[in-house]
Image (cartoon, rainbow, N blue to C red):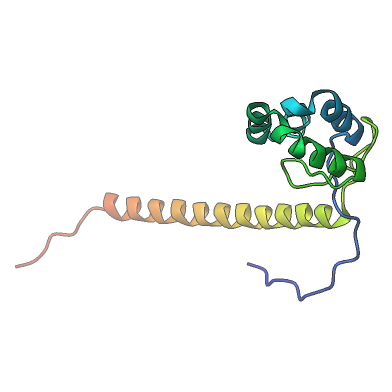
Length: 142
């Protein structure tokens, strides 16, 4: 198994943001906010049901969410902020995430190699035991 790499500082990267549209969430919140439609959109159905039952916290919760949506601080179910206004803006993937994926793939390949080596050894041991069992035994002298 290879030794871990020494610590190297990671380059600065942009913070991850939600793939969901801030504009859509704001429109849903404005027109159906008392019923929590914007919360269902961002993947928070539990708090959406709570908003339905309380009519948006009698307007206070709804107003708070509208301020958060307008300022771009509202977060989705993955705790990522909604910053993209348009629906079609691409989600930027961080280089650090790509490096992590590559690292995991390398580790997975190393595990596969170790597993294959172990399987070959077990197969060899089974063949040796089978040969030992099949070999005629010499009579024991008394």
